[in-house]
Image 1 (cartoon, helix red, strand yellow):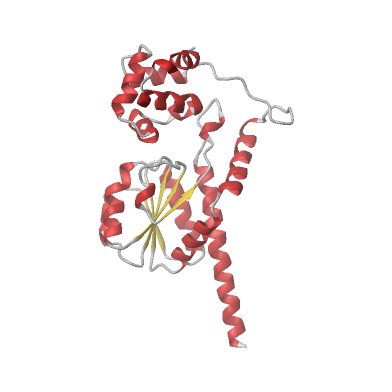
Image 2 (cartoon, helix red, strand yellow; image 1 turned 90 degrees about the vertical axis):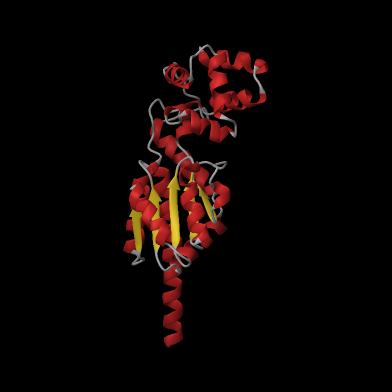
Amino acid sequence: MLYQKIENMLPELSKGERKVADYILKYPYDLQRYGSDAVAQTCNVSRSAVIRFCHKLGFTGYSDFRKAFINEPLPKKQKTEDGETENGVLDIYRRCIMDMDQNLKQEEVDAVSDLILHANRTVTFGMLHSGMSAEQFSFRLNRLKIDSHAVNDQTIMENYVSILKQGDVAVIFSITGQKGYLDYIKEMRRNRTSVVLVTMNPAGSLNKYVDHVLLCPTAIHSGSSYLLDEAICFYLMIEVIVEAINHKINERKQLLQEEAL
């Protein structure tokens, strides 16, 4: 099996190749959605290190290795601490909720909710699958009577980036937090637009370029035999932010009512 083969060859790998091997062994299901560039970015190594790793396993390239690896027999389900077998998808998302409860930085949520509440306008960005999360967030903000627009078309995105200015807020949904948005972020920051990144990658290359990072739990690492919908985890974060904004709106209403008495 490839799992065992990778473990056996760990002492023979270079430092960069070892990072790739350790990551794949720890998060094998990431290969269901990650290409070689994303693996390299996540491991903070060059793409050539990923390719060399595949060559040492006897494959011609990353695509051949990836195809063989994701077709490996899946590890048997583990038992929980109380000895009960995990109950599939419900347990996976339940753990995601627990992870969010334990690891979410409330000060970041408060800062982002304040930013959006006082923004001239909020534009949400998301490419491909993450575009649905951007649309959902914009929809939820609109229901709170907050001006927001969702953008998932790259051409429209480029136009928005050029007109956003100080006082506006851009919220980017990106599972991997990789460099696809980097040029957009740099231009928005030059225009003094506040940028928030909602991601599932604590080590994403975009994290250091934005004003705020909201880190979501990821379901992909949970060992499901099929590709889980990461949008559900984004939706959880959306509700957390929306509730924080709603709370601030109600506080402001109450304060105005008290001042009117």
